[in-house]
Length: 539
Image (cartoon, rainbow, N blue to C red; front, side, top):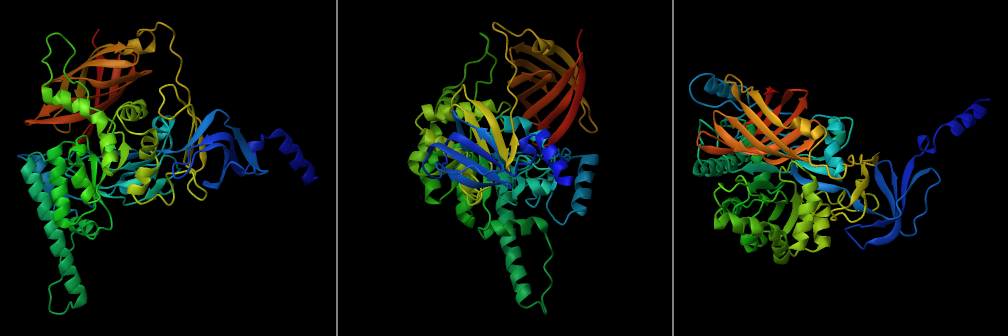
C-alpha cells in the first residue's frame, strides 16, 4: 500500500521535486580555464560541478535544462563591493561636544589603541547579514560571487569573498579574510586630517606592527624577566600582511596615489593589489616588477558638470583622463599585469558588461575581458582552486546567457549560486515611443527633505527630472547644490550618486530611495556611514 501511495505521489509531483542533480545540456560552454566546448553538458550535484564536457551523460535523476542557443559561463565575480554588509553608524566627528567623547568611549571599549578609521581588524564577515533577496539585482546581472568590504575610514578592514546566496552568513562566505583594504582618505576633525598625515599614520602603524611582532616573538621565546607586550588588535591584524600571508588592497585611481601605494608596499615587502586603477597603466612596469595586481574599476569617469550652454568646459587633463580610462585594461594586459574587473560602486550594474565591452573595443581581447570578470579575481584572491571556471569539482557558480556575455542585447536566463538555481526576471517591456510617461514620470518633481544626521538634522531639496529610466537633477542643502550622477529610476525606486563639499573636502555619496505617492524616503551612504532621509513632494 505504501508503495502504491508513493507511486501515486510521483505522478502528481513534478520531476524536479525528486531530482538530485541538474543537467544543462546542448550549451556552448566557456570554461575560461581551458578550451571552449561548442556543444556540451554541465552536471550539477550537491552545489558542485559533477561533470562537464561534450560527451557527458545526463544522470537519470537530473532536472534537465535545454540550453540550446545559450552559453554557460563561470558566474561573474565583482572584485570590490559592499554587498551584504549591514550599514554602520556614521563615525563620530572630533571637535567640541559629544563627538570627541564618543571617540574616546569607543576607544576605551576596543582592544586597540587606534581610533575608528585606523582599525584594520574590522572584519566584513562580522558585518554581513543573511538573506538572498538583497542580492537579486546583482544576480540578475549575472553575478554569483563578490568581495565585500566596508567603505569607511583609512583602513576599511578585512574583506570577505562571498557567494550571493545562502540562508545564513556561514553559508555565504567563501574566504575570510580575503585581504586588508586601505583608502587614501582622512579622519575628519582629528589626526590624520590630511593626505600626508594619512600616509604618515599608515607607515607608522606598519612600523609599530613590526615592532609588536618582534616583542611577541621575544616574549614567547623567553618571557621571564620581560614585561608582557600589550595586546593590540589593530597591530596584530597587520602582522599577516607583513608576513605576506594575505594581500593589502589600496584604493587608488590616480598615478600619484598608485605610486605612493607601490612605495609603501616595497618598503614593507607587502603583497600589493590596487583597487580602482584608472591610471595604473602609467606605472604598469612598476606594478609588474613587484607582481602587483589591479582590481580595475569599470565605473568609468563621466562628465559631471551640467550639460548646459553656461556650464564650464572640462579641462584638457580631465578630457584626456576620460578618454584614456577605457584603454587602460588593454595596456595592463600588454604589460603582463594581473588584473580583474570590479563595479567600482556603479549604480547600474548593466554598465559592468557594457564597459567591459568598451574595454574590448579599445584593444583588450574578449577572452581577457571574460577572464577578468570570472577566473582572474578568483586567482588574485587565492580561490581559483574552487571557483572562477567551469571545471569538475568546483563550486557550481554559473551564469547562462542567451547571446554573448559582452553583447548589448544579451539575456541572462539562469544563474546558479552554490548549485542553487535563480531565474532572473526579464525587465518589463517599454512601449514604443515612451519618453518618460508611466510610473517613472510619477517620480519627477521637487521634494523637501530632511537628512537625519545624528545631532544635526540637515534640510534641503531633491529636484528630479525623468527621461525613461534616466534620472537627472540636483540635491541642494546648506552645503550647496550637487548635480545628480548616474541616476536611475526602477518603478518607484530611485538611485543616484553625487559629490558634496564638507569641511573643505569633496565627499562622494550614494543615494537610494522609494517614492510612495508624494512621500520619499531612503538612505544616503558616504565614507562616514549611512544616514536616513525622508520628505514630501512640493505641490
